[in-house]
Image (cartoon, rainbow, N blue to C red):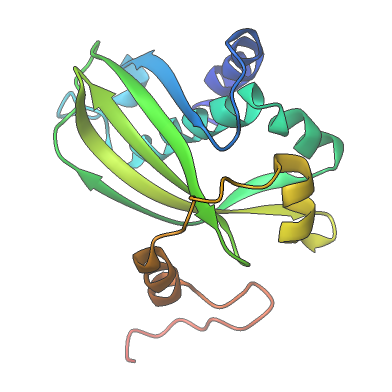
Length: 182
């Protein structure tokens, strides 16, 4: 909810920015706002993922994939995320969110995103996303019909497969009881 108006504005303004190939990369220039920071006066660690949503939306809108997804009733959901921090983004600082798809497998579409200021990476994240419809997860065959096929040299790094396997929870239709003793 905290980024709802910003997201709606982005969905409108991204349509006016130059078109992109979904397999290319997006660069979204932003500035750190007062709503992005915590008591330490830098971007709150949890806010990075919310801001990175904007970068993924920018790529999807500018590539034309967003409107095709919405027509088909598909919604993107995050299935797994990991982030590393290097430097703090401070109030008022200009930065960009750099976004690209690094591959897909039978479970997810994977993004790499970077927060970049003054030519340096401040934070980097890897996000596994799923597309879902009223009928459940969207199959790769349908996704590739809308996205087009990835470039031949786009190969998902092996460590991403291991990360996904090591961090995945059971599917929503299977039990996942809570117990610290394991």
